[in-house]
Length: 222
Image (cartoon, rainbow, N blue to C red; front, side):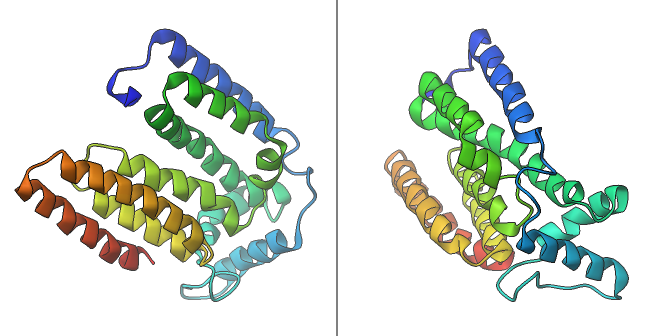
């Protein structure tokens, strides 16, 4: 895999240049294009309820939606008020994080050139620009998907635990993340098979144990 070699200086500069464009493209008219959607307003109402009622909540706008993004949105609401900008800013920062998660995944799986092309496509894709700024929970799907893949492609000893936890949090965020989680699970299965074949019998048992424990971690995160 290409990730075994540190990126050359030209590649680092190219990625940072693309990221700068990514920041600009995803920040332009963030509070006005598109206009505030009804579901976004409902999630903003959730934050109002968090700030005005006593106690904590474990559900979001619906019973199948988690309150994670509602809690993360609180400081932005306190700073900017109940505005479209305050609702969408957290998604913008998650989108920035998604860029770097995608960079590692694409470079590792497909090499530097293909990875760079993928980042450029991500930067200028109208659908991504418009929909990834919307302030609702499904906007976090790409973040959790690339986070899981990023973890699985690392050489971490307990990566199965962290991948399972990330998957559980993604599922707790919104139940329909299950389809995306299943796709990430197929990639995880491929990584598991590769790791198992690269190790002796004891290593296989070790990997199998943590592959199973990842499901427990997913349940905990959920």
